[in-house]
Length: 127
Image (cartoon, rainbow, N blue to C red):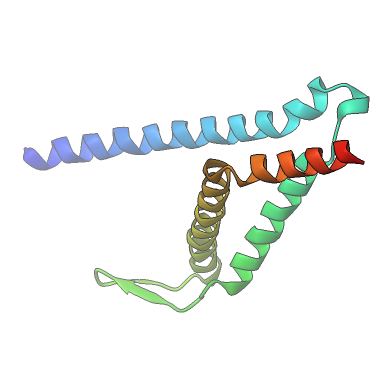
């Protein structure tokens, strides 16, 4: 009887994960489109498209770098090259994005941007 409880919990967790993944996809799409719809035409910048293009390039590069070597886990062989490469793509992309985000947080916390901006504004006002 103890096995049935763990099975039911696994089913609930799977559906919860599907719901969270669906919400994440919707939020990502809304967050990507919203600045282009709300911002006035004269204030729109191409920064959002650059970020989207960089993420797309990152996903393609990490897919190409991913391994398609078959794996044997707990006696089960996983040989589908596409899904093996997709798994590696997601892992590698996550690592790269975490490293990039950490670098930007450290840059923001360091105050280097404020120092550079204040030096630039002082040199402009002197001229």
